[in-house]
Length: 482
Image 1 (cartoon, rainbow, N blue to C red):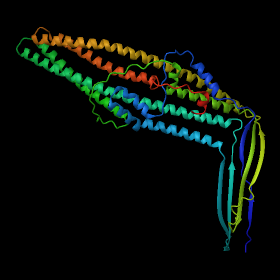
Image 2: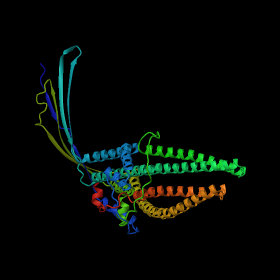
Image 3: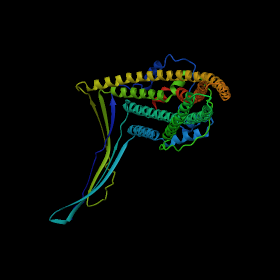
Image 4: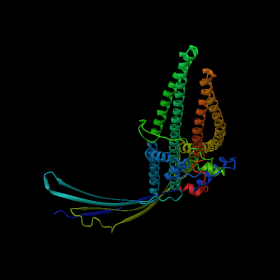
């Protein structure tokens, strides 16, 4: 009979990585640098907070008091494929942060095994061997390298969230602009149809007069030419209307099939949002938030690179158990001989051909580049708001002038048509007056759509809803990913 044998041993450890340099702050230098890049902004704007709640984005467009528009915005936020891809990027960043933070916790593992063996000339005389092992590992972040990695991952996550927020707002704005364009194209098409009907009525009068011999053939040919041009305008307007519908369908995440049917007029644009507190407004924009967090992430990565030249002190804390039994499982899970070992080592790179120094230089250069990108992002945001406000106000002033011009041109057209019917107005003059009136009305419709679109541009430039306020983020909160 084969004797029962059990062996035990120690094989598990935990590694704590130490460095000779102290724990340097991450967030404070970044915020000091950001403050310098924000210098010089005027002091008359308000705040527009970024929010992760889709209801807030949807409600932003309720100011137009158009239930169909709100429904389309909600549909786009649910179905747009670009937005779905953006949220997957957020989930990947969340997983990356979770992976980095997992290094703060002990790593525990266990294994159980069994195998049998026998001589080939006596297979019945086999030996069964069982094994059980358990191990634990823990990395202590004594000098801050893991903390810097977590800060970098947290900032990266929040930056990705800001990009997602920006994508969501851009899609909502795209839907609203496409929606208003569809309505505008419908109104322009109605205008062209009215023009065609006028041309037909005028041509009937012209044909009657020509048949009676009261006008020359050149007027008849002129009437035929203008009638054909009106028919061509209908075809072009119908094509533009179909293109506008397809653009809206694409923004909604649908296949473009020209199946949307909408009725109604362009709403009046809301008043311009109030302005005040520029730093809060600028920093509430998703692109500025993303640039700030990218800079925080870069500062943290630079901190990690700067640890490279220093001596690395490794402290080893090991605890574990390994049992093996033969022909029995008795005492396989016995923990009596659990063993502990502690050790330490000091390592210093003497020569690496300049690899560590190059990594530090790269990280420092990336830090400077992130600062410059942030500064340019702030300048661009400032420029977006200034331009959006100016254009919105200009379109409002032009609307007053265009309304007067259209009303006056319609009255001139009415009088001109009466004169032509009476025979006191030439056909060429009538066409000139009619073209002027129709162009004035078309310009007014286009301006109304442009004002609505510009309100959206201004709303987006301000970062969202400018009627709500929030405090500036603190360095600690930003570094911790809050």
